[in-house]
Image 1 (tube, rainbow, N blue to C red):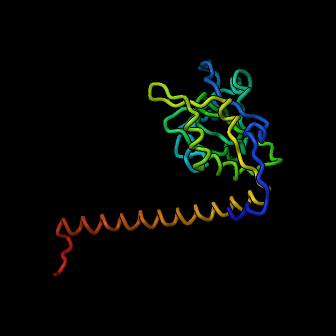
Image 2: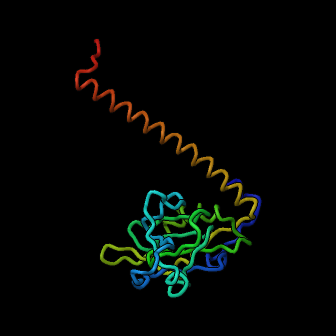
Image 3: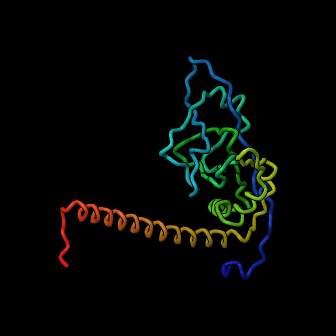
Length: 211
């Protein structure tokens, strides 16, 4: 709040900050002779940290499907993906350089920022934040235990837009906080592992405590 206290903050709809907001679709089955070489990202490839999950295998589709029936949802490095089918909603991932051109299925939406008013990391942090997530959850259509967001809902998400400098400063602060949180989490995991190991030794009689 202090970082933005000395300036007016514009509010923009997400679609005003993007050159493209769309979702993917399901490709028709390619002939078995056609090479499947283009990564086809699904909800399982997204995480809750703004990253593409490398531990999940990428499904592959053919280049012909990628460039023809799925050409509307061709994705590039830097594009921001968000799942629109849940639960859970709230998964976000930025396509890294290493993946190259890829595509997405019908449960994933892409935001392609124009870069003129918005910093990519700031936008990702906002999507992952409580304000955006609460609003998206409230707007989702809930049927038969499933949650769905439409393209229009995602376009109409209101985003506070301070200056680019302030956006970068906010992102740096959040990155620093996340690093500390990750360090604390790793230390807690290590202590829990040590606790379990000591408990196992004591219960098995391998170690004894003098009282």
